[in-house]
Image (cartoon, rainbow, N blue to C red; front, side, top):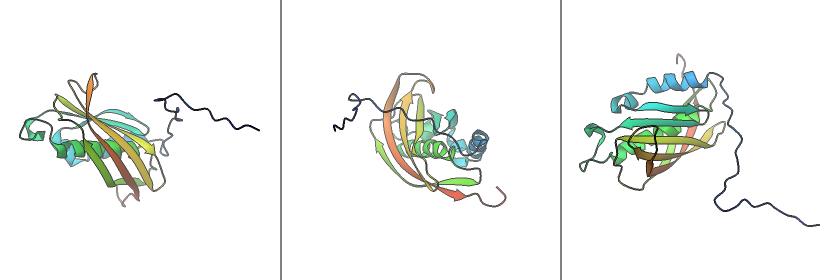
Length: 167
């Protein structure tokens, strides 16, 4: 008896089943939470794409989010990436949940020079307690247009916590 395993061609990834949120009101919950984020409001970030297990945030260039050479600051790149991954993960959590980041690893790949910073967070593995996300951060001339230049990538672990009473 022969055992044959089909191997996809190099560079191909298997098609994943679409993610199914645990909360039918996930979109309103994520948007409400984002609206309460003082950090995102302060830097001027906005949601530009929101799907189950996916969140894309965009931030226009401003001197206030730049470092001394005029690039988007690395701390801002991490902040936007953390929130994009966090909201991608939060979209998959139950209605009685809140989300916290337990860790992330950020690689800054090239200077972030552009008119917009765009962070695309995607759930790698949703879980009841821990969720892993991957975030790519790009610079672009417009938030939802190509071409985009990859400037950073982030791997993140989130933890689901119970929503505090009254929230």
